[in-house]
Image (cartoon, rainbow, N blue to C red; front, top):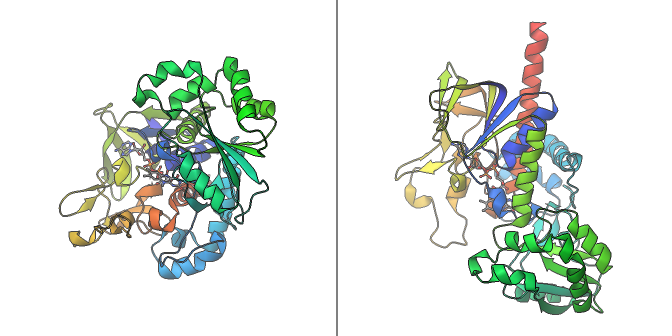
Length: 426
Ligand SMILES: Cc1cc2nc3c(=O)[nH]c(=O)nc-3n(C[C@H](O)[C@H](O)[C@H](O)COP(=O)(O)OP(=O)(O)OC[C@H]3O[C@@H](n4cnc5c(N)ncnc54)[C@H](O)[C@@H]3O)c2cc1C
């Protein structure tokens, strides 16, 4: 099997770089062993919320010079200040170009609400999700409406968060007889299954009637993210029938918005002609003179999968892109050089809420995100996303931003490289 580019890992990073390359005429395959971090997605992409020293960031574009001084190996430092701004705008345009209109901009963080009612800064928020700018709302009274017995959403905490911002809250619950079958098994009473009921056109009128009744004298409705999974048209129809805005708030996993974003990107990639090998695991590679020729997978055994270029986007420890034993942190496919602290006692802090050093461990790269093996860059292996070293996605609030920007950056590097080779060959 031969491709222009083979991508290892089909999370946000792999899918964004794959779509970008396919849009530019490349033939790509994504090999992905399983679910990605998108299944836990909050509905908002973070770009940069805090500097490594803990200082809060309101304008990510303006903060890159300071970040580069504090974190010389940060992926954003490698990308550089002006390219950072360009790629952040490109990321928003990329989503819009494939049909996902987001709220927010890279020169001004806004705020989102977590399922526990915590207000957090962020960059891009998915359509119809609650979005707070400058701590202000254009409305005064909101109805938070939950489904009886649905435990993956905490309306009490969320009410408190809104009330602290001066919004009057009416807390309401409802039931639908159609929900009783899934209610019998609490482990089935999750956002994805609720959505199967709410997505039915036959239930639209009754749901609209309930929401109208429960939100009288309220300007807006706040609803858990459990509608529109298989039928994205249903929410606009509901809003139209209810006659007032309905804003979604993410629930505990499974994240409906996350799973549907993963599926949407995957479908977009395959519609462009990309090959997505789900449930397959890349095990090892042939590397000759710092050049990768083939990768091998569990399902394909000895059959080599070859390409001109490879992208490694297999995620961090969470997705097993990085592994650790008692002595070392390693990358299991190409055995690339990794950045980690040699003293294992320094890997983590016993207080869960403190900065965890292991979050910053990852694969070493050069300035253009080539993977490094035995201190030498591999000329056709690019590394992107959560597997990169030098940043702390939790403490800096930059997880999706690093994934998105590095994915677009490496795709661009591959396209420039191949164009240069073509013009030399002519
Ligand atoms: C639980 C969780 C929730 C998060 N929520 C948010 C959020 O709401 N907002 C935000 O800004 N950031 C969030 N982040 C940060 C997150 O890291 C990035 O947003 C981003 O989604 C990471 O994407 P990725 O593609 O680099 O890695 P991943 O999403 O981890 O994907 C890596 C993929 O590679 C596959 N893989 C691994 N090894 C192999 C192999 N050998 N062969 C084939 N495939 C392989 C895995 O199965 C997986 O599908 C979250 C992170 C986690 C862990």
